[in-house]
Amino acid sequence: MAERNDPLSNIISIDGSYLEGGGQILRNSTALSVLLELPIQVEKIRAGRSQGGLRPQHLTGIQLLAQLSEAKLHNGNIGATEIFFTPKTIKGGNYLADTKTAGSVCLIMQTAIPCLLFANDSSCLRLIGGTNADFAPEIDYYSM
Image 1 (cartoon, rainbow, N blue to C red):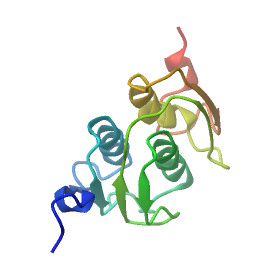
Image 2: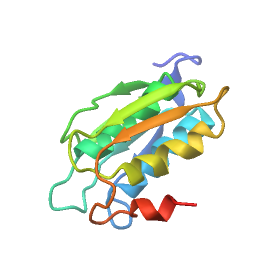
Image 3: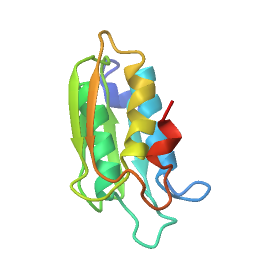
């Protein structure tokens, strides 16, 4: 039995196959987990896609959130269909996220920027990946 102060005792379980079963539920739930400092389990990750599980851009985004919130990430591997994510306080700083593919940096921004708005200090993001990827907002979407 979990002790009361065990962070996994109040874990929130998210069904990643909900609605279209793509990456958006993963991005939203991990970002909200960081903002609310609540542990989550996401299962059936991208179950609605022909190649389910974590792809490089999803993993890169989750790893970035883990870094900026000093989170524990369990099962953070390419192809994983379930993760456990336990964040702490959001820290400002300099962060690098490299998808090592043409994976969308815009989708990573979609996850990280709302969290960094609540960081304890200023932040600088350096993102490496695709700027105009299929099935993602183009970089011009973020131009001001």
